[in-house]
Image (cartoon, rainbow over all chains, first blue to last red; front, side, top):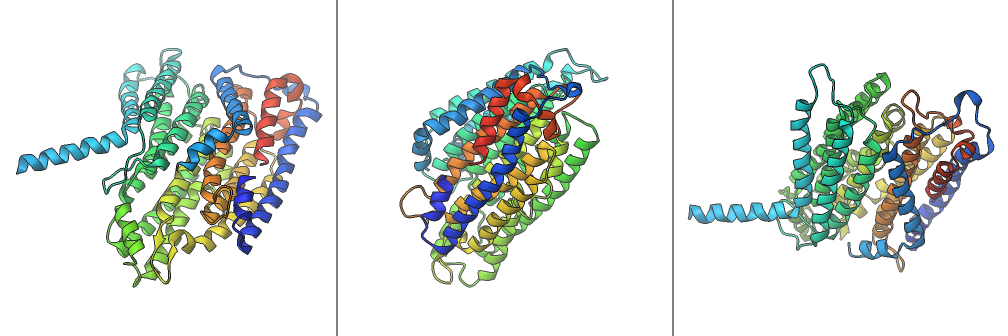
Length: 87
Length: 407
């Protein structure tokens, strides 16, 4: 969204086209991400290849840290913007 | 007189080391690991059980100490020395150390006990390389820092798994990486030829003052070659073709690293090399000069990445093409640069997106790491069928990461 706004905010024709292509591609991209999500939620697990976790603690920890970072950047992005605006 | 010269040299050296102290700490750990590891593994390749946990803890400790030192530093005025510690260096160092810790966790169980030291050491060297790209104040220093990322990456791709797909991935990455390095070096040499210095501040001064006006063709060649060399690291089209095969064949942690770390280094190097005002023809910058090229790279990367990702059944190949498309998104920020009116500038949006992208993509690979078993790893998208019933929390987090990746 910020990249879209930055491209649109240039006020130039090439900037507007970049913003439009960005929106079009985000829509295309949503399709294959949603396909994976659909596979996880809508398809039954094949009995012979049931996915089970290895319970590798470091990978779980990495996954949790990334989830916290993603949610934090979505909910309270202001602290990162403050750091970036100093650059 | 000679005492004064030596004293001055020592002071300069101390100051330079002070600017890169967190990276020195990480690189010292790398040396320690490479030196000590052979003494703990027998000639037959047997290692004490659980040795990889010790190397993992040591890597995390090293990054934490480096992070503590980084937090205590503050941006300094830029001089003509070999290193700089400006706001961008400070920011990038924090980002790479934080995500480096996540990558250490992802690498933790990827290599067996006998090879874990070298694997983690390569990862730490790559992280230090990213920091040094941001800290370099010289073309030569920047090139060496970029190689400090590339050379350990070859080992990092191969060490955890030495089967045929990993060997193929390593060879492809190796050959294309040296090709990209050669193009970058070629471009840098033309920039040096146009300006007469390898120091970035001296280059900026010469470009701003218009001393390159008689040599516009040299600058054209320099910019084209440097963009081509760095586009390989960004996985931007048409320099992306290694990505799907390498992501598919490489170990999970290596694919995760490749999806994020080279992008950070590539964009920082692009910023350092191209975001420079130039007095040539009229008054334009190297970024404006390269804008048409980067505009097309951005559009092609978005379309090629997304359209080819639609056709993939292997989840790592899909994430590789997703990485290509995100390189296109981020290039938009670079093309826009500071030319926005109100709201965030393109550079600010790029840096913000880079951090968010790191969390999302490393998270997605972390989920694949969680689901991986010693005898079989997740390859096809269909391998994830029914995950919401088997492991609902993991499925929910993968959903979060994938939704976030849609933008």
